[in-house]
Structure formats: structure tokens, C-alpha cells
Length: 444
Image (tube, rainbow, N blue to C red; front, side, top):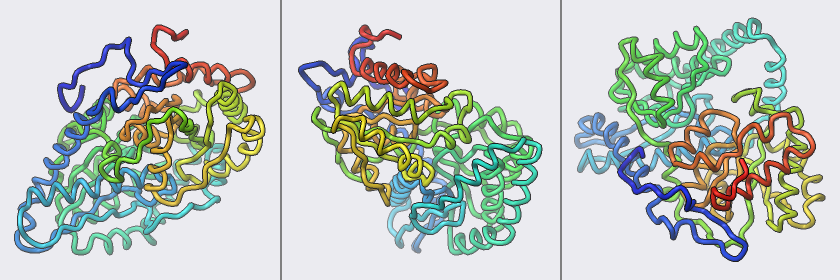
């Protein structure tokens, strides 16, 4: 296991086994279930901070995190806030006495606060989805380069004024969806390089979907930066970084876990362990799943799949609360399907209020007995709080997290909902119930 020699649990005794007459407290079975991973994160943060320590001396020190903290997807804000606090603590231990330490996030999209986002993005994504690559990619290159030239370059320059060091992380930042991150990260790191600032990469996800242009932009950004430390969040990301960048005079990547695993430390222990608590079911717009993940996994009738799965859970006697991570596309999709889901739920299905901050999301998850989600940071927050997550397969990054935490058995395989339609969700719900029993009870 990454992060320490934790005792591996026997595979015939799952950590969150359920039965008809008892709901064992998962945390009580394993009070240190994530401490090796927390230790790995803290050590990796201290390794990165150690390179910054000499800067401090007797004055204030300011470190900027480059990420997408203020994305409408509150999972991005969650991991950003976790990393801000942990890095400030690590710098305080390493740098010793002196002025105050300030760690602030710079949102790569130029946002400066949490908001519900714009509904226009869904329209844009639908338009892009219908375009052939040979039209879409050159068009987005021009659009994003123009955005950098007219607004973001000045935003990065202003935000980096007075900064002593830069950390890129965390989140799935080294991905290439229509050149979005390659262009923005290259521009932000170019400004850091111009100022001679040391740069660390921490706990990021790395995908293998880079275009030739995206690869060139990432390679230029990291080869020119004053790079002092690199860690990524899983072995798959490590392999991709090393394959695509390490041969370009860029140092290989080490390993750290996702900063979101520090959620309990950042937001407090808000977890409930009562079987009477509801199942939190995170709803994600299939448009986003297709755009950011593997299109072949997502069926043509995800609304029908959700309805069948949630109704089957409700009919088994469980209370189900529907929520989103905050994306406006997810909220709009839930607005569309929630009335029918509630009507079919026999009084056991309801919708949560929309969240406005990462803390709101974490506290809601803390009140659940189980969380079911495509969204990775809903699963990570649940795991960090000691609440069992069940993942809905759609992207290799989710598979990587469940493999890291030795919970690969607790992902609903994509074959159970590819194609959507009537009956598919009921099969998934049966799989969810089976996930809560001994593996010997599973039927595949």
C-alpha cells in the first residue's frame, strides 16, 4: 500500500459489510484506515516545502497554489482548501521563526470566488461535442490563446506579485480537454519562470489524452520552470508523467495521495455512522461524463438508468438523498430528473439543497451512511471521513483511486450501465446492495 505498511484486511471481511440486523461502524473496525495515506501526503508536502524554507528568513512568506479552486465543481475547491492548510502547516514546521506564512490559490480560469457557474458552459460543451476534432481543436487553440492574451496573462502576473514560490496542485490538472489546461498552465508557469520563482508540482492527476500540441505546451512549461519537486496522486499518473515528460530534461514524478484525503483534518470529523442515515446519491450530467471521460461507457439514457437504480434502492427500504458536486450542468440535469425520481421513491427519495462551498459538500457527505458517485471527490471526501463510497465507473482516475485504497470491488462496473435504459439501473442497484455484503455473496 502506498504510504506505509498498513495491515491489509482479509478480502473476505470487507470494511463496510452490512447485514439485515446490524450496521457496523466502518471507522470502528479501522480507526486508522487512511492514516498511511495522510502520512504520505504530509511527507510529500514537507518535501516540497523543504525547498521553499530557506526563502523565509525573518520576513513573511507567500506561496501561490495554481489550481481551479473556484470551479463550480466544489470537489476542486475541497482539495484546494485541504492543500492550502497542509502546506501552510508544513512550511511553519520547516521554516521556523519569522514572519507570517500565506498560502493562497490562484484559479487558472481567473475566478476569484465560489459561484454556481454559468449555464452557458453546457451549451458550449454540447456544441464542442458535435464538432469533429479537426475543427474543434484549432478553434479552441485560438479562443484560449486569445483569452490568455487579453485577460489571463495579466491576472497571473498580478496574482504572482509578491509571491515567493509556486505549487501546481492538486486535481486532474495535467489533462488535455481541448487544450484548456495545457494553454493555461503554460501561461501561468511562464509568468512564474519570468519571475524566477521555484515551482513544485503536487498531487496532480495526469491523463494520457494529450494531443501533440498539448504535449508540446506542457513540456515547454515544465522544462523552462525552476522545478524543485514533482509528485502525482497515483501510479497511473506517475507512469504517464514519466512516459510523456521525464525524457524531456524534466525530472520524474514521485508519489503522493490526493489532498482531498485530508478532508477530515481540514473540515473536522463530521461523519455519522448510523444505519438510519441516508444513502447520498451524486448525480452527474452525462454530457460531462462523455466530455471528460470515456464516451463508450455512458449510455444513451442515463436518466432512465438513474431512475431505475435509485428506485430499486428506495424500494429496498433505504432513504436516498440526491445531490451534486455543484457543477451547473449537474444541477440543471438534476432539476430535470429529480421530480420523477422523488415521485417514484415512495417517500424515500428527496433532493438536497444545493451547496455553495466545499465545506457544505463535506458536511452533507458526513451525514450519509453511504455515498454513490461518479464524481471522484465525492468518493474521496467520503473515504476521508470514514464513510463507505461506491464508485460508478466512467474514467480511469476513479479506478485509480479505488485501487489505491484497495476498494476496487466497490466500483459498479461500466458494463452494468452501458447503454442505459430500462432495467439497467435495477441491475446496478443490486450490485450496490451486493457491495455492502461479503464478497462471497456477489454474483458478478
